[in-house]
Amino acid sequence: MPNLLENINSPSDLRRIKIEELPTLAKELREFIINIVATKEGHLGASLGVVELTIALHYVFNTPDDLIIWDVGHQAYGHKILTGRKNRFHTNRQLGGISGFPNRTESEYDTFGVGHASTSISAALGMAIASQIKEEDKNHIAVIGDASIAGGMAFEGLNHAGVTDANLLVILNDNAIGIDPSVGALKQYLTNVKVGIQEQDNIFEALNFNYSGPIDGHDLKSLIKECQRLKSVKGPKLLHVITTKGKGLKQAEEDQVKYHAPGRFDAATGELEVGSNTLQPPKFQDVFGLTIVELAHENKNIVGITPAMPTGSSLTYMMQEFPDRAFDVGIAEQHAVTLAAGMATQGLVPFCNIYSTFLQRAYDQVIHDVALQNLPVIFCLDRSGLVGEDGATHHGVFDISFLRCIPNLIICAPSNAVELRNILYTSQLGLKQPIAIRYPRGRGQIFDWKKPFTRIKIGKAGANFINGNELAVLSIGTIINAVEKAFSLLSEEYIEKASYFDMRFVKPLDELLLHEIFQEYHIIVTIEDGCVKGGFGSAILEFAASHNYKNEIVNLGMPDQFIEHGSTEELFESVGLAPNDLVKALSGLLS
Ligand SMILES: Cc1ncc(C[n+]2csc(CCOP(=O)(O)OP(=O)(O)O)c2C)c(N)n1
Image (cartoon, rainbow, N blue to C red; front, side, top):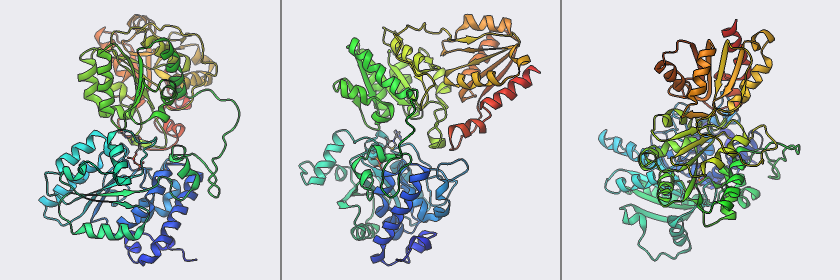
């Protein structure tokens, strides 16, 4: 059996292969991806679905001169492997290894950095207009999924492109699923097109795109033929390609949600590796999901909103129990926020669950639609802090900074599952203003979290460990676990001099407590899993300055740089926030 992939180190090698041999290459590429993702983990289904499309694009177009722009980028594994990163692909998403997403610093074939959805059409149009201005003859190809094309920004890009004569090819990779099944009227329209019920005018033609398809995205011959034809079609064009997410691995085709990013599995059988069956504390996501179901039974005004992350956020529990009161609005963070605002004007109590990193999309909506009108929307910011292997595009480290300057908005970072549960409970007891509740990905440390609800006083700090009065550590959120660990490792003479406080709220600060602390302790150390610039520590500096306190203040948190991918433990170490680093820092200050 020939090993075609072995000899491909760049697309020019690929272009030397005979067309008849490409299906064999597709098979090899699929196996290559499966074998590595099975043990190294990562995004599987999306990349398996575009194996043929990836081959066809690099085969027909003259990359890297012609520019392929992947939307989201989690489907670009085949692209990475064919463009010189085959031998490094086993380092995918690991510390020091290649990124799980296209990244301009990594390869000239990665034309645009991605991770967040719906950017490809705008970026590709920008490049196409640049080519016009520079009088360069290039192709610009945006590959976008059916979930991402429903994102607002993609519409904005289509709307602009349709009145240009830019050389833009949008490839709509339609597999009818994002991470969870796609939603919305556009999805229904695309389904109609697929099954041949096309009563309305073609929506893309209406936007001045030259539309072709739908074609079978696993049929290399027709893909290549159509891409070749489109090369000579001028202006904006859209090719509608139908693919199957997870194609080529039975389980991944059948359970597309689970196999989006399945963790480890058996490459031969596709069976997922069973985790250890020792009892583990719950994920924060489940604490959120199960708690709002409990609350929604009592409070009929509660509604839940997620922009395209029902499984990831665990809003699925509420969607099952209260299908009329829980909404997956698709990749539409801006809409999700303003939808929540609208609901709040009418007395509903919206829990708007958005990953911290994706809330960045909806900044103006938070300010203009929610905070300015002081509407009591409850933002649940999942995946705050470091998220690990997804890397720089996905870390939720900016939220405290970018939210802290917004008037009316309460910011709370519960330090454990019980606190999360209680602040969720407190938030729906008639709060008169918006609140952002941030919590990380993954599991906490408390098993017994389903305790009777307790109301939390807004702006009141949480637990503390009071010992000596030389140094006080002020922390926010779950990073208190690292502080606790550090204290357990600190030598006796230093422990006697130090205390720590879970401040719980970034805004409003517990000023009463802060006055006591600043009067009692010489050194104040703040620690947070968000960026230091403008973050919780900055709030403490502002407090100290405005009250003329002269204590020594040290701010620990994320440095002023983008943090790459790796396990969260490795990343915490890399920024000096692992327990051992804290021990060193505290010992240094106390010696
Ligand atoms: C702004 C934003 N919101 C949410 C996500 C999370 N997310 C990653 S992939 C994905 C689904 C993308 O689906 P689709 O566009 O159909 O592409 P496919 O997976 O089929 O390639 C979502 C919601 C994101 N990356 N960016």
